Image 1 (cartoon, one colour):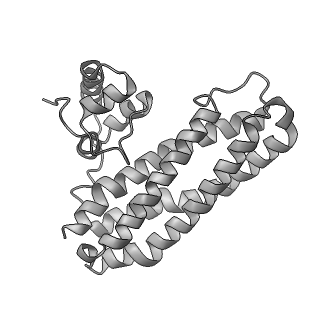
Image 2 (cartoon, helix red, strand yellow):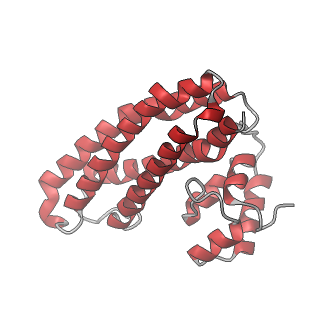
Amino acid sequence: MLTSDVKVGDLATEHPLVTRVFERHGIDYCCGGGIALSVACEKKGLDAEVVLAEIQKELEGTTTTEERWDEAPLEDVITHILVTYHRPLEEEMPRLMAMAEKVLEVHREKAPDTLPELVSVYRALKSELEEHMAKEEQILFPMIQRGQGAMADGPIAVMEHEHESAGEALRRLRELTNDYTVPEQACNTWRALWHGLKALEESLHEHIHLENNVLFPRALSS
């Protein structure tokens, strides 16, 4: 039986489907994965027992088995991160940038208080993530693959700090988009941008969780 004393990150690691519930309620399971579910719910003004019941229902309602990356070889975890998150990000981030700039150019007067800042925040996030992934692929991941993960506390601390920064940018984007509520006056590109940014947020939450709560601790203890 699951209890509300379990850490959010541990729940997401041991039961990957639980992240669906966390995403629905805006519970931070990546950078904030080190706190108990009860504390996370309290921060969001949620009833922990209600959320726990929703989690139980989610787990009981599935017939599929998701990959347990906390049990896979570290090499496989890194390959999964590269294939599932890094490579798609390289393609998706420029696409979203182009859409954001187009929406700003055409519709600036419809949302002058939010669109300019949204483009600025996203541009900074894109640049930061591109540099971040390059450092992981050129420095940290090779160290782990060479069996030097226990000596990677410095690079890992840097990566975790940058994850926090990315998390702040994601939170600001959600605020600027009113929880990705599509405006009535939005054109198709504007709508696609909102949907794309929301999908990016969910993917980055999974991505950061996998590194912060699975790969990094296991590498340091290897």
